[in-house]
Image (cartoon, rainbow, N blue to C red):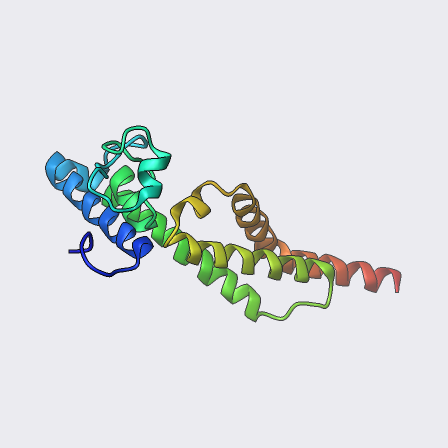
Length: 169
């Protein structure tokens, strides 16, 4: 029982949120497992020991912020969307990793790409335990889009750069 005894309040809160998500999904039915409860889905946190919840929510029986990204997505969008989102994250990380391992010229585009890719991967990892950092971070969205664009264009940029230098050099 994570609500009783000596246990880190923050960790206990996250585990309690996860159990509340599973209880909510169980009470709604099987369609909720596959398709979720919608963007405004909430859980009852009235039995929490975390005073931050009661201090930051007027109605603790309807809390929408779930810290674990997995459970937040499962509650709101269901298992089908959850699988698609995680597949997209893994695909992005694999694509970025393969580009990071490839050989870049020492130019500013390569450095920008490496910084954006690293930031994106760090926020994805951090977001697993604090979904709000990932879902509400405009810089994360910008870095994902920009690093994806750079990853798909780096080869073309190098080819254009080499062609320009051979014509002018």
